[in-house]
Image (tube, rainbow, N blue to C red; front, top):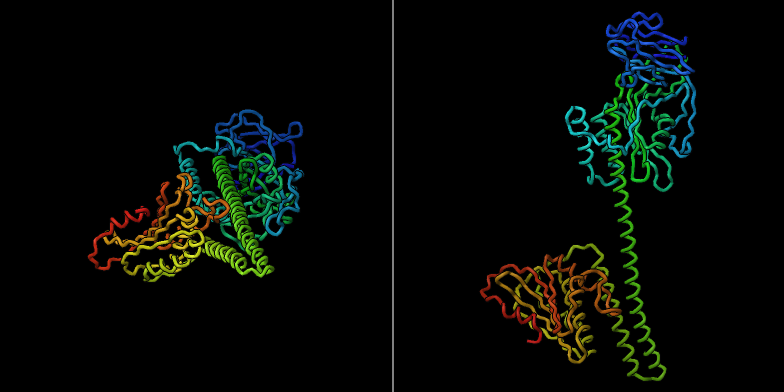
Length: 563
């Protein structure tokens, strides 16, 4: 049986059940009398042909339209097609059962929120038009019409959200806001495919105005969702809500009671897959979607897919980089800790041998090895904490020279083991804002690096402080007469785990120094030639009213330890 519902026009809300194989549409029709004066007396004919309903226009002056397209020859109809004659819009309902197998198991859906129903007489759907998401047709033309201007506004607002959201869920919520603002949707919901399991789960379910009679669960057609997932196309549909008390057999069912809805469902396309679907709908008694609105929604789905794919790629890349950084860190630290432990084991072996032979000199020799490796352990742990921990420096007015003297005193023993001379040349300095523990660590790291770099017996390390009153700065210059640093290594010298010492360095000392100096809002520089290397730490010094001239010559001398 054929049922016609009047959606628009003077006879809006009427329903006609047709139980014959042919019917005339027009003002003089007996079976379907219409009062629209824009309709001809004999406007068109509906008839059954080879088991299908077809419509033929009788050369009417205003024409006959099926789903927005004017027909010039007999046209086969399908369920939920829209027929416009004059100012009257009719919806066609065919009481045919159909089953569509889903590519996604029903068990994969969250039944508490969204339920897909197989199409039946209580819940039916028909696809009226489609739009390919990858087609150039969704790239909207320049704004020559109000529709195009509207579409450009939608795309512009959606593009503005890119980079402003922290999660994909936040983006989908914002996208839904834009859809409600620009499309006449009564309800919007988004289903997203889990990238690992492949399940489809509700991500957004929104009503423009939540009514008391609205169910918490959303019912939609499996046929619509399947078509979008399988063809990767956006579709414009008409469907009937599932209501047992208002089935197709009810003689008193109106359009509103039957729940006839205009539906747009579009894919969220990534490069290789369908990430999800967006469905918006509204009662056909209020609005029926157009082809232009389908294209706008399809473009929204396409752009949303690009945004989601980009967000997932960034997240995957960050995760990969974090794992790589953790792996690199563990490898470096394990290597350095193993070297220290091997050194301590060697010292312990020497001590054990000295105990067995009651040889005090050998015990002292072994203990010196153990002590040096204990110092290396402390330095490694301190640098690890400094480099990795986010901390606020404990800044107070302090004397830099005091920190220099304390740090150099700790370096005398390691220097003496190589017969290296460590000297100081300290200028008169004002009190400056310092993190005393931090600057102490900077001086110790750089001086011990210099001791390691200079040759045994002839090595020399000079630590100088200079007060530059012209620029209100204090400079700490630590120089050595070692072989210098290759230019290739110089640009990466402050990077974590970059070391020029081979097995002897951790690669964290200078990185920690750079971090501490940055916390003090200072600067650290390195100058190196084949005759030696100088590290210069520059710190701000507040004006103290001193008339002492700038120490330009002292600064120059500090860069040349052999002077």
